[in-house]
Amino acid sequence: MLQNLHVKNLALIDEAEVEFAPGLNIMTGETGAGKSIIIGSVSLALGGRVPKEMIRENAPFGLVELTFFIEDEQLKQALQKMDIYPEDDCLILSRKITNGRSISKINGESVPVSKVKEVAGLLIDIHGQHEHQSLMVKKNHLNILDGYAKNNLANEKVKLKKSFDIYKKLKAELEEAAMDSSQREREIAFLSFELKEIEEASLSPGEDETLEQDYRRLLNGQKIMEALTGAYEKTSEGYDSATNQISHALKSLASISEYDEPIAGFFDQLTEIDNLLNDFNREVADYRSDTAFDEETFAEVENRLNVVNRFKSKYGNTIQEILNSAAEKRARLEKLSDYDAYLERLKSEFEKIKKEVERQSERVSKIRQKAALELTEAIRKELLDLNFPDISFSMKFEKMDSFTANGYDNAEFLISTNPGEPLKSLEKIASGGELSRIMLAIKTVLADVDAVGTLIFDEIDTGISGRTAQMVSEKMNALGRSHQIICITHLPQIAAMADSHYLIEKSVANQTTISTIRLLEQEESAGELARMLGGVKITDTVMKSAIEMKELAANTKKSLGEPG
Image (cartoon, rainbow, N blue to C red; front, side, top):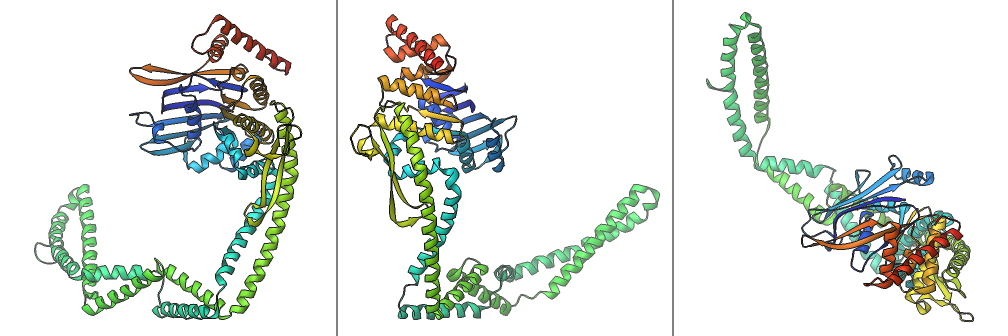
């Protein structure tokens, strides 16, 4: 579960620390207090996009740190497969944003954002304010079903994708191969010319690097010789040369080296320097005598380098790429030279993989349709608990005309909210409040088959009130018995069910607006419920209603078999 949230310099938050508890954690506060900033901060730490306005004005950096407590052994094993190891059953995910750049860390070790997202998928599920609108997009329905059926479906989908990739490649090659004889003859002629040109150039890997080195050396030949001659003269020729001066110094030391041991050491060191200098002079002399900087050699190197660079501009950035290009052209030429056999073989391979994709798509579809019956029935039962008394809920499957890496299924949820009415698409029948409840039902069902321990809901109660709100609160409470729930709400019915109630407040200090979050005691929670019920003016009647609401929530929990 999510144990701790630490936020610094984000939007209205100067610095905030929140300790979350198991069960149902409710966050409330006035409009604009910064409730969504809390959820936004969590999303940010888990690899979400960083809006420019998210970092607090004039702050040097923004920081979010999440601490998860990991007890489940299966979850630990899944993390270990990613080379992630909780320390003392704790996992700390952090993200620091500085000057538009961000650094993500897991237990203090820097990791790519993609790694954080992968880990987050095992730990937490965030339902944003408008996520229920995703139910209006039909393709998302299949993703929900695949998430429900992933244990039976995952391996089959991997096999299908591998086959589809081959199918797609062969299909593209077959379409490209459709040419008449005149086109084929032109391509053969062009390929033959290019291949002959590359082969006659007799290029060898690494040749360009050697040529460039020789070119630089020859281009600067006079400068090199003048510098070497000057160095040689200073070290080996004439009375003032280094060799002559060291020789005199050695004679001076030799006459006194026997009188003191350190002097003998100086003599040995200078002897070694003399030997090194003699070696240096011999190598410089050999280089000068063996190296020629003539115009003919320079012209040969320059011309060859021009040839290599011309081929690079046509066939690849390196000689190895040019040689690889030649190999590809040779293979293509062989295909075109025996075109009929090549085309027949290609068609045969394509038909074979097409049948395999068809077979695997059918297998995936059967698994989906079986799982869809279970999923839609489970969702229907959850919807009954969410004040849909006469609900029908199912999934319709259609076969697409073409394949995708996901098979050939085109599926969508269908719903009927009144007896006798036909099943229709969600977009045609469901209101905003109904979509919120449908999404809650889906999340509840998926939570039962998923190992994710923490669910976050940002105002999932949009568009609902009255008896429906009470039923949603009971569903959230029930879900909180098997998962950690963190929920932002504006409904007192849901807030009353909180196991832990947090208040997000906005205040002004030193002419700066800041948001803070704190855990409420029982009496404070009742006061916050009264604010949610009565608005600005909280009368005794409103306060009494808030206390009664808390008592009713406690009694509901007891009736469901848990302490109030």
